[in-house]
Amino acid sequence: MRCAIPSCLLAVALAGASPASAQDLIVDRRVVADFFQGPIVAAGRVVGMGGAYVGVAEGAAGHLANPAAFAVRAAPFAHDWFDWDVTLSLLNVSRDQQLDLGHGASQSFDDARFAQLGFNLKFGEHGLGVQSRGQDYVRRIDIVDTESGAIEQTTVTVKQTYVGLGYGQHYADGWWLGVLLYGGSAELSLSGGEAGRVNGGGLLLGALYAPPDARWRLGASARTSVVGQDVQAEVDPTALPPGIEVPDAVAVPWQLAVGASYRFGPRGGNVRPTFGHGEPEAGPRARRYVLLAADAVLTGPAPEAAVGPDALFGGDGRRSGRYPSLSLRVGVESEVWADLLVLRAGSYFEPDRYAAFDGRVHLTGGADVHLGELVWDWAAGVVIDWAPAYLNWGLGLGFWY
Image (cartoon, rainbow, N blue to C red; front, top):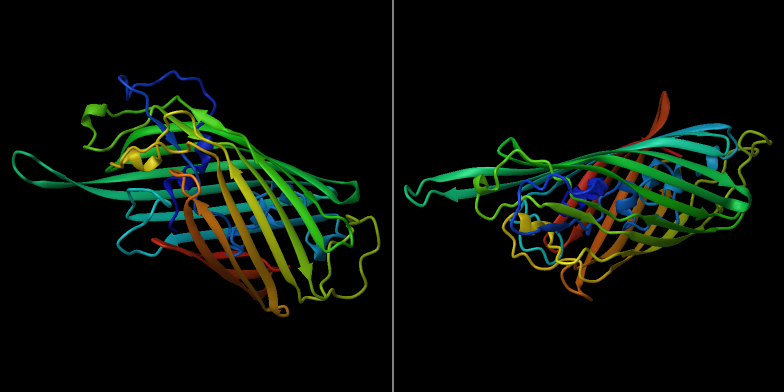
């Protein structure tokens, strides 16, 4: 999965809110890395729809887009007191000559892997669950000994892990609210030895308005900004390979998103949930539908003098995040073969974090196939995200509903 280091350290929102206390690495100047997520890295359903999911907010796939999804009920289960959902996504990168960190980046990685697991339990009008995610990025650098001319290869690895705890609740007249509190770590290592680590956490808020019997929904989410300055390290900066630096601070900018969706077809619109306190619907619901969605995502500027994450690995050190960045996203989903096949397509604009009013357009797609019941009713999925110098693909597993 071609994703930018920024996304790999989304959880460097993880970079927690700890005060500066261990700036052991860089003593003569301040290096702040702007960890901006350009390419969309999420569950397969979200990526397949071009990231347009804030106004859908359904299922465990939607936790990171809009945490109201922790409580939102899919139509077939709106009349059950208890419900639960799980989704697993595994993404990888198609290897070629370049693994672009994001539009405008001057450096690239050689390999990247991504895994995400979402799980929730719903009790009546309440829902709670967990969201975990891990990402690895690898770059191999050849270092030439100036005296002997010998070449030694150093492997630079960025590992990010995080776990979040979320809660959502349904309110009267179609309102759903949710919150996700997450924490974890981001680690930089050189040929297996740790060079720097940042720990911390952040907060994501979400809301969805889905009036009963209407075919449309409106959603919004807000992520807090985080600046982590307590960088723990075990490597002397003079021992690092040329062009490699460990920052003394990382910043994850704030983010605001709004979205809308509309469902066509016999499956209908939003169901008025009874949560087990009313009579269930008679007979099976219609399956066929077409879902349209659109999002606008605004990401705030970075702290003054911040550089892009690629600058830590030999990049040109350009100023990153000088201005807010706007991403527009659209997607469509349809159950084209009733109770068997769902297809998705989408597109989104990835803004250039180094220059205003510039960026690249991504095209996305995906499919889910109904596998049938094996204790539970399962679906397997595939997803792809393409842009110039970028190809992200992967597989997923979740419930069919």
